[in-house]
Image (cartoon, rainbow, N blue to C red; front, top):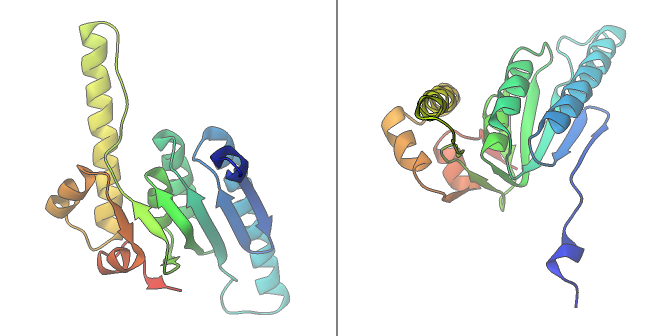
Length: 188
């Protein structure tokens, strides 16, 4: 019998034409690779648009399967996706949690498969040191939590009161629930 470790898939990020498969956690390294993959796909899409006189560039299809990860690195890639000249569409392939959901909701179109799940929750972290250092960490966490809420309220149908309730729990949402809350635009 195979153990869970034998079944665990290796984290990966790969690009095939205009499709990028982000099957990994959100980290400095994975976000740097994702940024490079988006830049390459953007250039190819723009070249295709010019060569074949297309009115619109071919969108980038970002497939996400991620347990989440570093919020700071997610903020950087979120800004990059939002200002990318070629539209980025997200596809939730199985699941996306935490920072992975933030990356998805800012895409110009967002999709999930029928059995995909998404987890939105409050950030977690720790603080230690002198009292003043702990207070500074609390301030920093409040700032980052406000930034997360702003992203969700601007890119979904959820308002702050509902979002506060959702973020206070660790409950996975089905594709249908994500569609109803405006977290995705369609189920594939």
